[in-house]
Image (cartoon, rainbow, N blue to C red; front, side, top):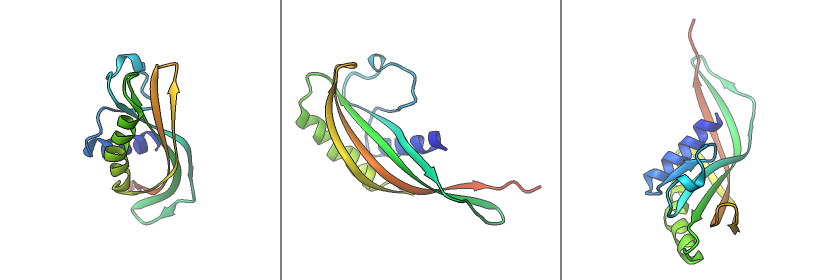
Length: 136
């Protein structure tokens, strides 16, 4: 369920022109990824409530904290990174289908491990996962 949620968010971001977008579970090192502004999607927390059963479908309500990290090369000014976030990422978050998202926290810091500025948006998200039941 976590991977499908991450992939859903990545697909929504891509549809709004946010590229490249990577899953936080991607094992490829940052140094081997795109050198410009790039985006990473991860899950900080996840919880679900009791499923709702219908004859053919199981509905599972969930809540999650999704982190979207936008990174910039060392020579990129913070204004450009924030502009990219507001024009592309924030616009995509506001239009995500099947998820109700709210910005919980927005931070910027320099990550010395990857030598990049990192803007992190922590989103509170709620939705319902739909699973078809097998008929035997």
